[in-house]
Length: 259
Image 1 (cartoon, rainbow, N blue to C red):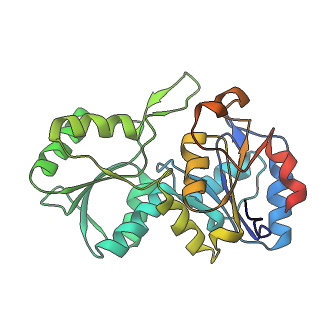
Image 2 (image 1 turned 180 degrees about the vertical axis):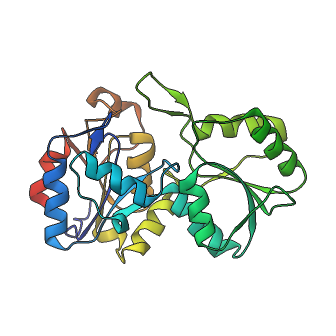
């Protein structure tokens, strides 16, 4: 295998890497501080489309992680970027929350339930049968189907919650139309993130806790990948996948000296 170039920029997942169940992972604060002091480009990524970057900045501050708003990249922002590139000035019927609707407004999209160009499904804690029925009818009438991410479940203090991927499957079953998923593991999310900070995949690394999203997305985008074992993937799980991370580490604390 050809030797990789030195890492000049970093992308990292949030849940399971920097924090776990609302508590910072030991070493996460040191890693973020080192990145900020180094001046190297970096982004914190999340497939969750509920919150704006400003919301996430405030939530991270509250647990002691100083991540500037401009260093946060969500599937909602990636979705808005994709739509602005593909179909600027369009319209959409949206199932989602402020993170998604704000991102779409900022690129000039009109949100409507009357003959929209797209139906866009994002994360929300209040999926309603009425909204899903409306989405089905609009897709059957010709609206194109986009989803912010394929995650089928999301975490909560009470246990797993149905998430975007599960609701997308319901709408697909009712319409026969599969959505285009923007978030990880689609390398499009990684490419738009790299472009946002002016970075190149050959000199960038992706840190994640999931083989099926973070590591796969980094691999397909041509990045060096670090799997940390502080989230959903255990050491014993790695062999079940037909691909491998470039490196496996116990936690992000082991990466501080690489910055």
